[in-house]
Length: 85
Image 1 (cartoon, helix red, strand yellow):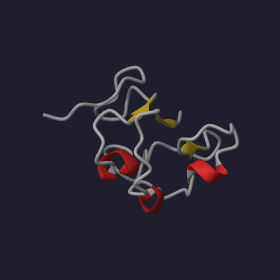
Image 2 (cartoon, one colour):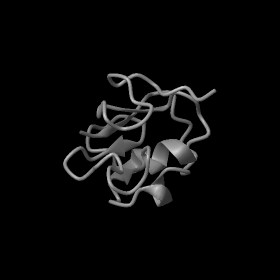
Image 3 (cartoon, rainbow, N blue to C red):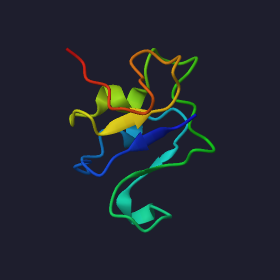
């Protein structure tokens, strides 16, 4: 269970302060070396128990940038971007 940030991330920092588990790091600290923000899957809870959806996804201004795996979290569809109407 973990949020993933896709390569359409614009590095705006909106998600960083919203993560209650501090699982998101910016592109400078991404352990994979990729130039995108990174979510530590070992500490990310997808905000289960805290919010209806991951807080980072609610804060993100880029539609489809943040995806998640948990099918019980509102709006999640097998890791596909959540598109709100």
